[in-house]
Length: 421
Image (tube, rainbow, N blue to C red; front, side, top):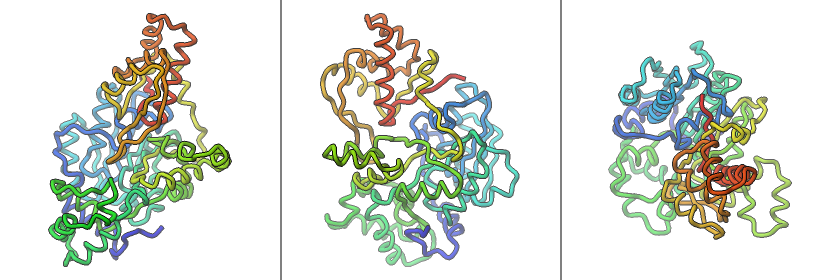
């Protein structure tokens, strides 16, 4: 697949030099972080492994950058008493130095650091990984197919890969601006056009796509590293979801769930039943692609990839376990509290997505609202059952309410199931 921006004779070396100059992201090592796949680090891994997490887990951070995901995931598993073997791989030694400080701050020891391209990992005889974090990296590798082949070869049969990739439509405006800044940069040195970049971005006409795209709004206080990564990266590409699906399939992988499933459902975007019937006859990936085209603003794709021959797991089966926790993500206590007071009303439920809030309308009955009132605490199924029983809700109605609430909010990416180990 050709890169949108592919002028570098040696893309890998160009990207290495860029991230040596601009370790990304530029966040203090001691600052608390979240993963870029799911807000709850445990849930990111839990989903990719179909709920299978034992007492020990092996994780690769492929293109680990300054170590945000490693810090967040490491802390989550330490707190849960799960032993972890972490391997960090990245091109940039300055990025790795920050990642080392993050790991120490999180109490992580024994991390193996590899300063080399992802494509080179296959020759190291590494033991298989349960989970691979691959966030914001497929956009910059020399050849996405080669990189995914390498990672697929390192994945255990029961394992999964958490992937974030740039979305083509939602980055409308990026690549013409990269080309313009390249012409004005005046040097081949990494990030040489930062001063010109700020001057150009600060004076764009209102009809420029950078000005019109809500995800790309220029904020003068944005740090140099963030802006350089967006506009000056020497090897940068974006994808449509069908392209990512094809890449995964060529590597023996399958997309097994999106972080925001509702974004890939075209039905709410189609005005008539006839159109929805036509859409229902499409294969799942074509439905997802249709939804992306209809939205027109998806700037990232976040999903999990697993070995293609692995049978899908029914995550809702975890609701039969009284110790399963319902873990909220993206919505806070105030959101759930407001929804819990809206029994019988039609309300709009939206979650953050980049610079926007996207969601769907819903109506909740009294039993649903009793569940919503407790979600902010990350309750167990048993605690929810008891709470509803105390409010006079019969057992069957309580079970149905818990399942309805989970079904609705999991589609938004705002509620996940977490089984204890």
